[in-house]
Amino acid sequence: MTLRVANRSDASSIAAISIEVWVGTYLKHGVSGFFADYALAEFTPSRFADLINDPEEFILVSENAQGIDGFIRVSPLCNAPVAGWSGMEISTFYVQPRHHGRGIGTRLLAAALAHCRKQRADTVWLTTNAENDPAIAFYLANGFEHIGETQFRIADQGYLNNVYALRLT
Image 1 (tube, rainbow, N blue to C red):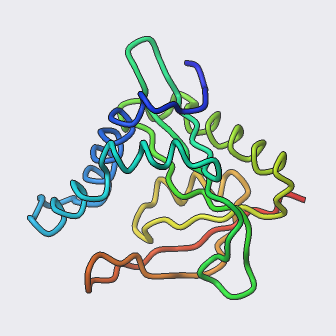
Image 2 (image 1 turned 120 degrees about the vertical axis):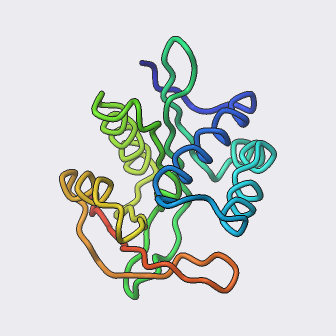
């Protein structure tokens, strides 16, 4: 397993992993057109190519002999959806489920946090679905604290997300 900064040629692989992980994690009982339309519009190679080309974004991929098996995206300093909190945001953090338990997530997170420290961020924050128990356990085990809640919105629908933060100083 190798960690490296994403390049433009990774955009389609990152889009495919995003669809796989998002659908597999959040659509437990079937895929409706509402959610399929969201995933197919949101997780596109062109969108990821734009993010990769954005100098403000930091995207790190985990690559094995066959291809990319996970990635983490850190966005620049911004306000968290909880009053009084700001910092760099872990915007996206996906590892293919069949690769869970191999240390990929731990290594990606450590590298992302090192990047945040290098950027002199005091805090890093993220959101995750309030029902995503494996992700929540992972973040808590890695020192994040639950700081509040927000709604993830798709059209006029809201879904409860927890907000977690880690102080880097």
